[in-house]
Image (cartoon, rainbow, N blue to C red; front, side):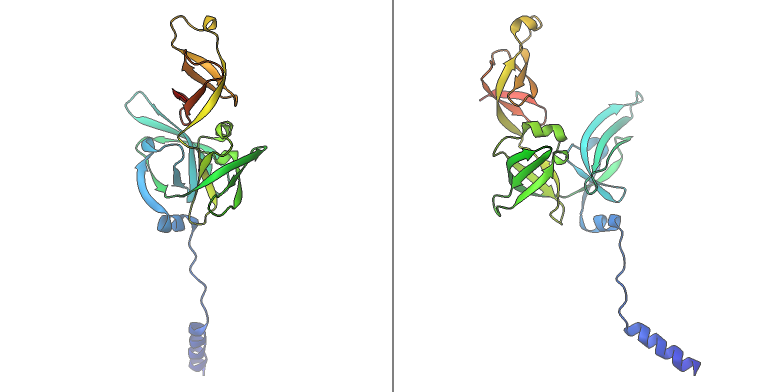
Length: 224
């Protein structure tokens, strides 16, 4: 009799639906999003890496040394899901997994406080992003202009994680430090753009001129 009930129980158990196996976020990242490995010394601001089983955006990266020929990297990271920020230090040859991001162009509409409103020109869908999501940090919001095309990057779920400005843009010079206030023989002079951003321009640039600025380095490229 006991054998009959045991056999019946085993058959019922086999026929009942079994729960799906659970996977950790880190395993999911490794299985579906992993693209390539690179050393921390080769990482750049804007890269998204797998760290502690989660995607983290490299906001800033500084490369230094210890005086013994060993390179050290200081990284400012932002958790792409929670927004948590942290600073990590590691050897320049420490390898990380860099995650692939999908990129879609969006047109900048306007800003309310520290929130940028963008529109997908293909679908006309509007989205909101925090200035913290800008590659290079929230200060980059000062360089965003009306109608500027930004690249919104996301993982496979299409949730925005990172937003890139174009490589360069044109701005109007508001003020230039007078020649008398500059060092003798200096060919470059401090200037302020009409958005309040401070840059350095050649001494032949004057207030009211339009200049092309590299948005990653904030350096003068040419007069427009």
